[in-house]
Image (cartoon, rainbow, N blue to C red; front, side, top):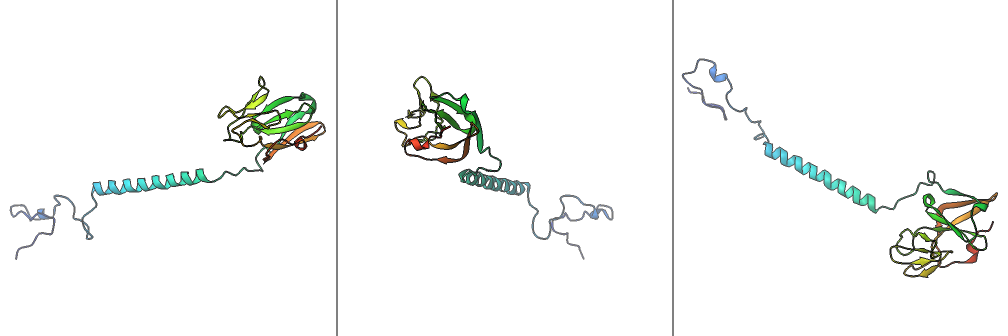
Length: 191
Protein backbone atom coordinates (compact mmCIF):
# COMPACT_ATOMS: atom_id res chain seq x y z
CA UNK A 1 0.00 0.00 0.00
CA UNK A 2 1.37 3.34 -1.02
CA UNK A 3 0.81 6.41 1.03
CA UNK A 4 -0.85 9.32 -0.64
CA UNK A 5 0.88 12.58 0.09
CA UNK A 6 -1.12 15.19 1.96
CA UNK A 7 -2.46 18.03 -0.05
CA UNK A 8 0.12 20.73 -0.63
CA UNK A 9 3.09 18.49 0.19
CA UNK A 10 5.55 16.87 -2.09
CA UNK A 11 5.48 13.09 -2.27
CA UNK A 12 8.20 11.44 -0.22
CA UNK A 13 11.49 10.75 -1.98
CA UNK A 14 12.19 6.96 -1.96
CA UNK A 15 15.97 7.56 -2.01
CA UNK A 16 15.80 9.79 1.10
CA UNK A 17 16.74 8.33 4.51
CA UNK A 18 13.95 7.18 6.81
CA UNK A 19 12.14 9.97 8.59
CA UNK A 20 13.24 12.54 6.05
CA UNK A 21 9.71 12.74 4.68
CA UNK A 22 8.67 14.33 7.96
CA UNK A 23 10.96 17.30 7.43
CA UNK A 24 9.01 20.29 6.16
CA UNK A 25 9.98 21.65 2.83
CA UNK A 26 7.86 24.44 1.34
CA UNK A 27 5.07 26.63 2.68
CA UNK A 28 2.97 25.60 5.67
CA UNK A 29 -0.36 23.93 5.21
CA UNK A 30 -3.29 26.33 4.75
CA UNK A 31 -5.87 26.47 7.54
CA UNK A 32 -8.98 24.38 7.14
CA UNK A 33 -11.19 27.42 6.22
CA UNK A 34 -9.40 28.11 2.96
CA UNK A 35 -6.20 29.74 1.79
CA UNK A 36 -4.51 32.29 4.09
CA UNK A 37 -5.05 35.97 3.27
CA UNK A 38 -2.47 37.34 0.91
CA UNK A 39 -0.48 40.50 1.52
CA UNK A 40 -2.47 42.23 -1.21
CA UNK A 41 -5.77 41.36 0.49
CA UNK A 42 -4.44 42.62 3.85
CA UNK A 43 -3.28 45.92 2.36
CA UNK A 44 -6.62 46.34 0.53
CA UNK A 45 -8.52 45.90 3.81
CA UNK A 46 -6.14 48.30 5.61
CA UNK A 47 -6.69 50.98 2.94
CA UNK A 48 -10.46 50.51 3.13
CA UNK A 49 -10.32 50.92 6.92
CA UNK A 50 -8.25 54.11 6.64
CA UNK A 51 -10.57 55.50 3.96
CA UNK A 52 -13.56 54.78 6.21
CA UNK A 53 -11.88 56.64 9.08
CA UNK A 54 -11.15 59.59 6.79
CA UNK A 55 -14.80 59.76 5.68
CA UNK A 56 -15.99 59.63 9.30
CA UNK A 57 -13.56 62.43 10.23
CA UNK A 58 -14.70 64.54 7.27
CA UNK A 59 -18.34 64.13 8.29
CA UNK A 60 -17.43 65.09 11.88
CA UNK A 61 -15.65 68.28 10.73
CA UNK A 62 -18.52 69.33 8.44
CA UNK A 63 -21.17 68.75 11.09
CA UNK A 64 -19.08 70.55 13.73
CA UNK A 65 -18.53 73.56 11.49
CA UNK A 66 -22.23 73.85 10.66
CA UNK A 67 -23.39 73.81 14.30
CA UNK A 68 -23.84 77.28 15.83
CA UNK A 69 -21.26 78.27 18.39
CA UNK A 70 -22.35 78.85 21.96
CA UNK A 71 -20.66 81.49 24.01
CA UNK A 72 -19.93 80.23 27.47
CA UNK A 73 -21.31 83.07 29.56
CA UNK A 74 -19.56 81.82 32.67
CA UNK A 75 -16.10 82.17 31.10
CA UNK A 76 -16.75 85.07 28.71
CA UNK A 77 -15.84 88.58 29.77
CA UNK A 78 -19.41 89.87 29.77
CA UNK A 79 -18.94 93.29 31.34
CA UNK A 80 -16.12 95.43 29.99
CA UNK A 81 -15.00 98.27 32.24
CA UNK A 82 -14.28 101.11 29.83
CA UNK A 83 -13.02 103.62 32.39
CA UNK A 84 -14.01 106.87 34.11
CA UNK A 85 -16.49 109.17 32.39
CA UNK A 86 -13.92 112.00 32.32
CA UNK A 87 -11.54 109.99 30.08
CA UNK A 88 -13.91 110.26 27.11
CA UNK A 89 -14.19 113.66 25.44
CA UNK A 90 -17.53 114.69 23.89
CA UNK A 91 -17.89 113.71 20.20
CA UNK A 92 -15.19 111.03 20.52
CA UNK A 93 -14.95 107.38 19.52
CA UNK A 94 -12.80 104.86 21.43
CA UNK A 95 -12.20 101.35 20.10
CA UNK A 96 -12.37 98.30 22.40
CA UNK A 97 -11.18 95.42 20.16
CA UNK A 98 -11.43 92.81 22.93
CA UNK A 99 -15.07 93.73 23.51
CA UNK A 100 -15.84 94.04 19.76
CA UNK A 101 -17.31 97.54 20.13
CA UNK A 102 -16.63 101.27 19.92
CA UNK A 103 -17.55 103.49 22.84
CA UNK A 104 -19.07 106.65 21.39
CA UNK A 105 -19.43 109.79 23.48
CA UNK A 106 -21.99 112.00 21.75
CA UNK A 107 -21.69 115.77 21.34
CA UNK A 108 -24.14 116.19 24.21
CA UNK A 109 -22.10 113.92 26.54
CA UNK A 110 -24.11 110.67 26.35
CA UNK A 111 -22.65 107.22 25.67
CA UNK A 112 -23.34 104.52 23.05
CA UNK A 113 -21.54 101.18 22.70
CA UNK A 114 -21.66 100.51 18.95
CA UNK A 115 -20.82 97.08 17.50
CA UNK A 116 -17.80 96.80 15.20
CA UNK A 117 -19.67 94.44 12.82
CA UNK A 118 -21.27 95.92 9.70
CA UNK A 119 -24.96 95.07 9.40
CA UNK A 120 -24.52 94.26 5.70
CA UNK A 121 -22.18 91.24 5.78
CA UNK A 122 -20.48 91.41 9.18
CA UNK A 123 -17.17 92.99 8.16
CA UNK A 124 -15.26 94.89 10.86
CA UNK A 125 -16.05 98.59 10.46
CA UNK A 126 -13.22 100.99 11.37
CA UNK A 127 -13.76 104.56 12.59
CA UNK A 128 -12.45 107.20 10.18
CA UNK A 129 -11.65 110.36 12.12
CA UNK A 130 -10.94 112.28 8.86
CA UNK A 131 -14.44 111.54 7.52
CA UNK A 132 -15.97 111.60 11.02
CA UNK A 133 -17.86 108.34 10.43
CA UNK A 134 -17.57 104.55 10.35
CA UNK A 135 -16.69 103.27 6.86
CA UNK A 136 -16.97 99.60 5.93
CA UNK A 137 -13.99 98.50 3.79
CA UNK A 138 -15.90 95.58 2.22
CA UNK A 139 -18.77 97.25 0.34
CA UNK A 140 -18.59 100.95 1.18
CA UNK A 141 -21.35 101.23 3.77
CA UNK A 142 -20.93 104.26 6.00
CA UNK A 143 -22.38 105.08 9.42
CA UNK A 144 -22.47 108.35 11.37
CA UNK A 145 -21.30 108.90 14.96
CA UNK A 146 -24.51 107.33 16.32
CA UNK A 147 -24.19 104.26 14.06
CA UNK A 148 -26.97 105.33 11.69
CA UNK A 149 -26.63 104.38 8.00
CA UNK A 150 -25.28 107.25 5.88
CA UNK A 151 -24.31 105.26 2.80
CA UNK A 152 -25.92 101.87 1.87
CA UNK A 153 -25.82 98.84 1.16
CA UNK A 154 -26.08 98.28 4.94
CA UNK A 155 -29.80 97.70 5.66
CA UNK A 156 -29.88 99.14 9.19
CA UNK A 157 -27.90 100.96 11.87
CA UNK A 158 -25.00 99.34 13.74
CA UNK A 159 -26.02 97.13 16.64
CA UNK A 160 -25.69 98.33 20.24
CA UNK A 161 -24.46 96.94 23.53
CA UNK A 162 -25.89 97.99 26.88
CA UNK A 163 -23.97 100.83 28.60
CA UNK A 164 -24.11 101.38 32.37
CA UNK A 165 -22.49 104.13 34.39
CA UNK A 166 -21.76 103.18 38.00
CA UNK A 167 -19.86 105.60 40.29
CA UNK A 168 -18.73 107.61 37.23
CA UNK A 169 -17.24 104.45 35.66
CA UNK A 170 -18.47 103.44 32.19
CA UNK A 171 -19.25 99.71 31.86
CA UNK A 172 -20.43 97.88 28.74
CA UNK A 173 -22.35 94.59 28.87
CA UNK A 174 -21.31 92.56 25.80
CA UNK A 175 -23.51 89.54 26.58
CA UNK A 176 -26.46 90.70 24.45
CA UNK A 177 -26.42 92.60 21.19
CA UNK A 178 -29.41 94.88 20.57
CA UNK A 179 -30.46 95.09 16.92
CA UNK A 180 -32.01 98.35 15.79
CA UNK A 181 -33.36 99.92 12.62
CA UNK A 182 -32.13 103.47 13.27
CA UNK A 183 -30.78 105.79 15.96
CA UNK A 184 -33.18 106.84 18.69
CA UNK A 185 -32.13 109.40 21.37
CA UNK A 186 -33.49 107.05 24.03
CA UNK A 187 -30.64 104.61 23.19
CA UNK A 188 -28.10 107.03 24.70
CA UNK A 189 -26.91 106.44 28.26
CA UNK A 190 -26.28 109.63 30.24
CA UNK A 191 -23.67 110.21 32.95
